[in-house]
Image (cartoon, rainbow, N blue to C red; front, side, top):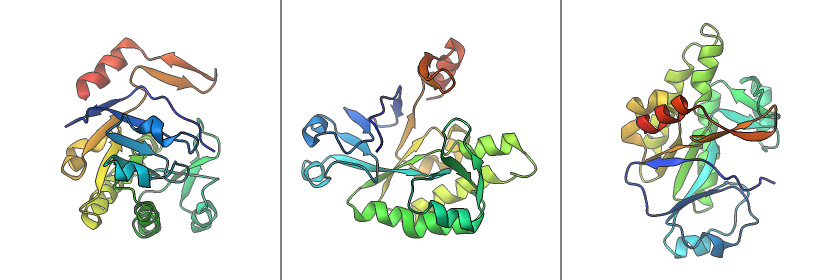
Length: 215
């Protein structure tokens, strides 16, 4: 069960009047009535029918750069041998190799169709920054991760022309994929979770200003 996340966030480009990110199935649909754009967990969420009937713009969460051990396809991805170690800040979540065609096939042929079949009209693509992080961690072994991320997002758009897309951060590839997405979401703008101390901390002013200016 995923709990409600309160994010320090900024939405850019044609921002709707009110929007919310909510990762729990324990929220009442009525609590979302005031929002025009709603981002939900694609596994644990309230009924979509009332939101769609109210003409809400509803997006389903999809992690492109990591697979958690709780996901039903984790074992299959592990057998494929395309995992690149556990995220040190998020126990049980493992990086994937963006370059492996088996990951692309799973995302395009299984994960996205599963989300859209539920009724979601859009996708919120998360953990995109992992591609840049992995390349910085080992530029030789992980060469090409960023290019693979660009290719995958472009292919998602090509195969799903009517689906709206929100990109969570991924600033390094915005120039390349800007025509393929509708919104940019930037979490942790004003504060960030300190995993060691298990609390939120205000980010440094220079970092805050930099992200806001970029957006």
